[in-house]
Image 1 (tube, rainbow, N blue to C red):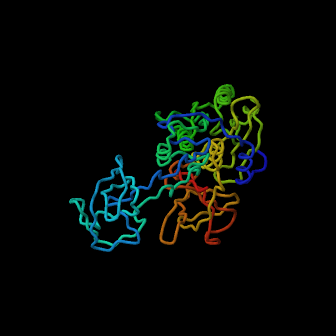
Image 2: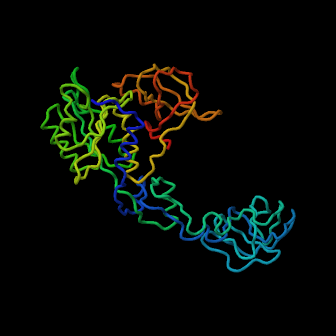
Length: 411
């Protein structure tokens, strides 16, 4: 294994090497949730398209102001789906509902609670009125041509609503990256098996598949390859042929049965780095497949659950964001920290941490350190604190925080 690469350099090398987003495709709005926009969405008209009432009450002409006790003649109604026809004159009012069109001649809406009520041919004002109150003016929220959703936006529920408001029932989105996942190891048995003392249930590919889905990708679990060259080669050939990104889990260290890098090399994968200055995650591998195939990147993740999970969040997640046309961002924030003590190490440490919101702002709370083979230590974290070198707790009030373990990402 060559000299270990820093986490920042590894991330930069991956993003610099695999830069072009995937092609786009068109999907109907009912299938757009969670997808990534391929192009920006702009408003084609001003919004609101007319003056709209922000309250249930009475629309009237306030002019320079109406005093408490003023009495106005009620001449009609304006409902959200049935506007008032005509214009208001002095001394007149109409009943109006939230979202309804404000008619010509009216320049204010009085909430019904500040009047004598909806019943009767006249309404008495019980609060002073000023022009413009409780009206959403024409074009006050968006002017025509305003960018509403940028390219690279992940379409969550609010964005789906906005697309419907703007009439986009078919949306141009990035194709989901297919991520093939190949787990390795003779000691690994299916999750529904009862393992012998020397065996372990296969969990890493299940966790990685869920992480791929959270990123907007399409996971392709290809099963477990034994520590045997030909079976491993067959799975990796399929992965390189059918996926945009290939993830291997385990078999990437220096052991006599760690065969992944050798087999990948035989298949034409060119090593870009092998080894991270990171705990957990030291054996991580990154390579580029032969030109002309579908796959764009190959990453070999360590076999320990915490290592595999952590390296995915720190390196694979930003890669998938970039392939979807999004911005991986600066990927860290400086936050004060507290929580469980950690032990200094010669390598950078990615320690699971939870974001805590309090009266003094946001801080990162470190969870109790656990071995990299412990799959339970990640349950309490929403991201990672990056603990550098030989520094001891308390030497700096701020630490880099990288989101990801529970779907929290700070760009």
